[in-house]
Length: 337
Image (cartoon, rainbow, N blue to C red; front, side, top):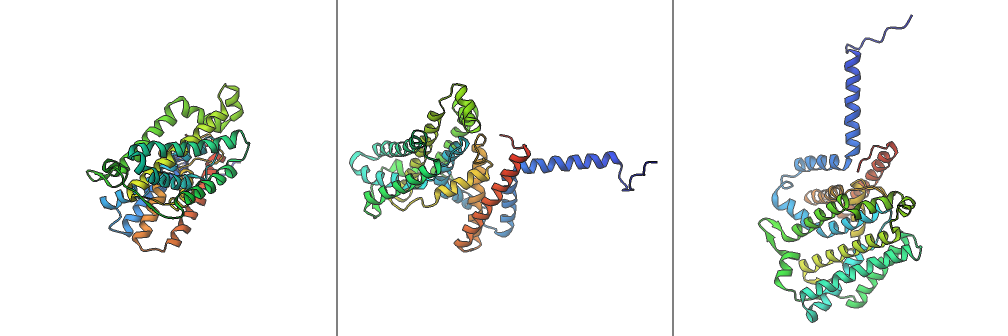
């Protein structure tokens, strides 16, 4: 005779429904770990400091992380395509130094074009070395990181270079406000919006995802895989140069040591947002969430007067946890773009 089920006081159907609901909640949290982590971080931070949720503090965080945010946008495309780029911070520094040097001679807005061209050339060289030279992305961009930083030091002779800039440039790229919102935050926000639309709704974005997911299949479909890779590295270089313009507009100087470790913070933001290093999938919106997780973590630790060294430890722990959840999502097949 079959044994009677143990008495639980709960009807089997209700118990099964509860398990189903818990499973769905678990899956939802796993799929959206970055958003869940950000919400938890905001709640905890608000309880720890009364200054955390003030308007001034929040917009200060946005402003501080605009430059890393631009690099993170470029890195999102690069990582989705199956690559990596370590040169963003160095391209930022080179761009700022070049901008400070040429601005007195060709004017502020001529300088903008030159700086963006510098970023595009650096990014294109990265892509060319990777696709034509068959050098692994880590090695190629590590080389560009060293070269760009070295060029910045050579051009500036290791000194900070002050420069005079047009008031309109300083307003939009540095110190202006539209209401209570810093103008650079608006510019960076527009870049995020355009990038999100391009990634999700354009042929270019779909090709980037396909190249990262299955380069052989992409090639057989008629996509110029190497050309797409050069394009995403060039885009990353342009956005890193744009970050250099924000640095120049905010401080009014070219600084050869600017942007140190910005590329690591950008990579961390993309990884926390759920883009795996294997490529093929990712989201600009979730990269923004990852950026805010890092930015707000640093902010609350600053408000609590925690040592900067401990802040770096916190960033490392966050990255490891994010990668762990990313691997679990990929393993379970539950990650959705």
